[in-house]
Image (tube, rainbow, N blue to C red; front, side):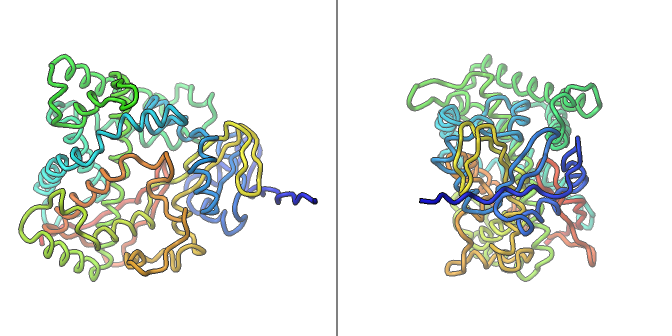
Length: 450
């Protein structure tokens, strides 16, 4: 029997000695990454960091295989999560294998349905407080506003009123500093991250201050004896138990998980809310239908937890924004052992990556992929193949907070849309830019009362 050799994995053009593909990735890596599938097929090699090789997996079936068992069990999180681990420690997002399974099992009660129901009122109150500061007729940076709102919602959900205003403002500033630094540090070799340059100094100072702030909140709550009141996610996390071992999270583990929630929730939720408001401003016919749905389901009352599953059009709008404007850029994995992926056998230590943004805009998977069309998710519509839509990941590493984030989006958007409308200047378009995540460029819109 003749064994068929797999085709060689091509290397992307544009690499230069010492720097690899750095100059193709800066200042805007999205066009380069988006071009790889059409030019090179299912898998292609690039250099993210000098002296390294990364295989970008581009076929949806291979991506799904990489994220789900049995292949997922032979991988750890890779270079992107190595960098995140510097900030987050050993959290449910950064660890792999049995350690991840144990952390996910222990974290699950914080995201159970009874807990989620309590958070809606907190989120709605924070949204209303933000709306009350808006001046009709004012032009504002919508993404920055949504960053502020999502952080307010998260802070109230996690800490209730346990942080004073000054501490809250400092935490918000440090989170922005750290997020702006991570994407650049991902491209740097290890020695460069240790240099006393402003980028590294800002990152280290911000990281230390964030962890100190959260650790102090945990210690203060523990000392107060109020850590069992269950009125916010912090007290819930401090009391969740592993159903198999009965262990509780240590204070350091609580800090890691809280920081993970803030980092992931602030960036992703804010970006998606901003893109929803942008797309509805560009498509007033769809916006009118969303408002009709909100009026039919809610009438004059505020949104409640029970309503979050009763708004199918708004749900499809969010799903289409998650496709077209997904925040995920290059997410990584690394083989721990020799691993078979598709036709290729990859040695241990192979760096892998996939790009959600490029995947979700692939014309082979989505007809007219740049068109905003919530109806592509109607029942009976032609659906993309498995693995072609991964806003929350897949398999055992699927985002544990996906329901929390969806509820936050529906609560915030339904509260905003019923009171305020956003308009764009004639001919104005907003383009995505890639940092550690994919986010909108400057998104200036005018806010008006309904």
